Every structure is written in structure tokens, then in C-alpha cells.
Image (cartoon, rainbow, N blue to C red):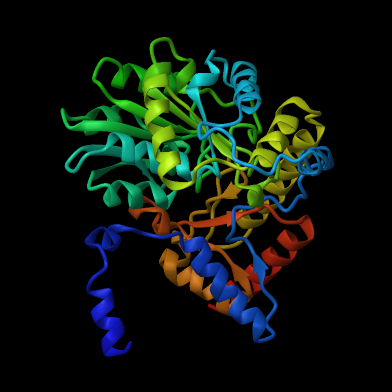
Length: 396
């Protein structure tokens, strides 16, 4: 770096030093560099469905563009979209909300960002899952909050332990972050878990950010939203979107459901950052919600079959054991039997097997000893990767 650039970087805001990143994109870059050198890589690092967006949704967006929906809309969101989200919440999340409690945002992450910016002051404590989506901790630190991890452990089927949660709550606790079904573990909270969590925080002035982005990708039963627990809706911010359920990662469409006073503040943050979410994508979202759901069901069934293949295959490899995930599209195998750390194993598989995975420790200290596989790829790719892993580990 030149002296001039060094002087410039010294002028950057201090808060940027507290901002983290996602290892998935870093590993993806490494894998792409190896591919550019001619090496064959099988990708399990990016959490993105390998399905195309259903045709009826694409057609709705095209029609909206043809009809001129290319201008600004309300910062809080296009009213018909917010009304459709209310219907969706009643049907799938089992709680009633109003359109004035919905804020449309470009993707799911803005709900995390705006919630933490709106609620967390320096020194406030935020309880979050470990291992968990790394952006949670990153944004807590960025806001000047104090991250307080709660363990998500294999021996508890990758579910939050309510008694441990209770021990983490202090008078400074402002926010609890939940994620079920979860990234990176695929763990799903039971109804009993959720009700126990609600009992632990109720009446203590603690908000809950419930990340429900994988809500529809559940293999046994269904997910249960803490917003549906009596007395919890106004204290809950529900995060959801279209990336995973409807294979719309590139559309950047999500929403938050929260009490109307907080919705006003989050809308102010939208005005100060994004102005609004594109109207034609919101119209596509309406079609996703109200249109046929067969494509969602087919995708989940495909993920179920892939889960069986990858879990059984990983369990057949010496030194690796893998629990069957309850939701999402992630396998989180235990690799401690290999004698390697998570980082060592992830690097080894990338360089010696041509298989790109994520180190469990990149999701938090409790992820050490694990790897994350995103099985949002074809059965053929999964079977080929398992063969490569088996062969590569045989040489250790």
C-alpha cells in the first residue's frame, strides 16, 4: 500500500474495525481462483438454492415492468405487498399482524442491520447463537453492543438450551437473536423450546429478533415462530424473505414484521439508506406468496433426498459423524475424529479433494470441530464430492 493510501486508511471510521464478513464469500473466491487454474471444484460453501425462481414469479415481475412499476414506492413498502405478507404470517407463522407492522427491505440482512441500529446502544448486551450466522456478531459489535453468545451444541440436537439462555440474561440485555431452522447447523427449535425461551425473556424488556428465513424448509413437522406465543408479538421482530423459500437470492427482497412504533423507526432507516425496495420485485413477492406453492414443496422434497445422501455418505467416512438436520439445507458434520481442526480440514478438502466447504469455527467458537456443507446442489455433485472426500482422507 502506498503512503498516500496508508494515510487515507488511517482516516476511516473506527467502527469499521468492528465490522466482520462472511467466510462463505471468501472461500467462494478461493475456489473460483482454483477453478481459473483449471482445477475441478465442487461447491458446498454458498447457501443458495440451485433452483431457478419459479416461472410464475418471474412472469409477474416482467408484467410489472411492462406496466411501468419502475418508480419510487413507499419507503415502508408497497401496500399490496405488505398486505400479502400479513396473509402469509397468518397462514404459516400463525400470528396476526397489520400492514403497518410490515417493512419491505432489499433482502434479509437489512432487517438485522436496522433492528440492531434501532435498538442497541453502546454497552447494551445482545444474546446470539454460537455457532450462528456471522453477521449477527458483526453487527452487534458495529453498533457498539456487547455480544453474548449462547451455545448451540450437537449434544442438544443443535437447539438452544433454555437454561443456558437464562444464565446469560442480565439487566443490560436488550435483544435476543433466534434462528430456526438454523444456519449453519440445520437445527430446529421445538415448540417447547420456543415457549421456554418466551418465558425466559417475557417481562424483562428484551426484544427478540427471530430470523425465520428458512421457515418453510423443514423436514419433519413445521417451524414455530416466537411471535405466535401469547404476549410476544410486540416484542418480536420477525425476519423473513424470498431468497431461500422461493429461490430468489438475486432479487433482494425481504421484510420485517414488528410493532408499529418500531416499524416507523425502521422505515426512517430505510429512507436514510435505500429510499425504498423496488416495486416490481415486491409485486413478484406478492405472486410468490399468493401463487402456487408446488415449486416450494418440490424443492424441499429434493433437499430431503439430498440430505439423506450426504448425511449417510458422511457417516460412512472414517473420522466423520453427522447428525441429520431438521431444516434448512445444511449438514454440519463432526470431524474431530480426523484429528484436524475445522480450518485445517476445510483447507485440506479444498486443496486436495476439490471440495469447497466452510469451517465450523467461522460461525463461532462452538462450531470448532465441524464443517458446514450446503447441500443446495445436485445429487450427482454430492455423490462425487463424497467419493473425493473418502479418497482424500484415506491418504492422511
